[in-house]
Length: 187
Image 1 (cartoon, rainbow, N blue to C red):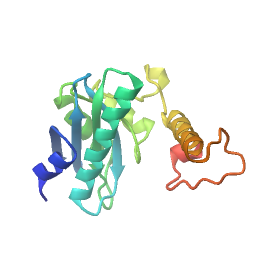
Image 2: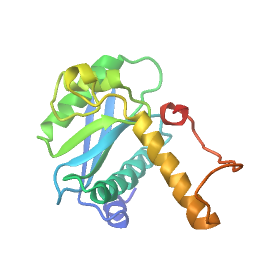
Image 3: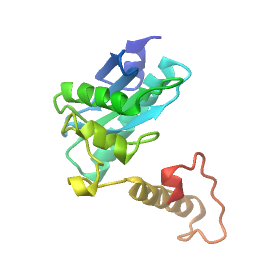
Image 4: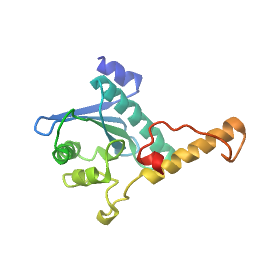
């Protein structure tokens, strides 16, 4: 794998990796840009066939988060974390505690949140180790599950595409295929 080539292709500055043998943690944090503030982006917890696939996923998603934050006018840069899900049995709480320590060691340079394969409960575990996490329970001062808001963003994106391509402002009678219906697709 050509690491620096990947960084150049995705216009990057930083990639951090961590491994914790006791919990099985293998994590990548990609920080695309921090000119507007600390990098913000969700934590994916998925099976990857190859480590390179996990790295490319983190890089491309972090870059997207930079643009998303800039368009939303928030004082954050773009980042993304990817945890390579262990095969077989593992202690989820121990793994997310180890991840929280990794995030804490970055000193606020990156703030993590829920994403594919992670939950509000996982972010609560991370919160027990670091304050550099969002998307935790509203009872603990957080914003809760981001899925309804992400779903609304997907809906607005579909509407914008229909308006651009078909010149219509409604979706009546149209069929839209959504791949990978999870938490976001439910809403």
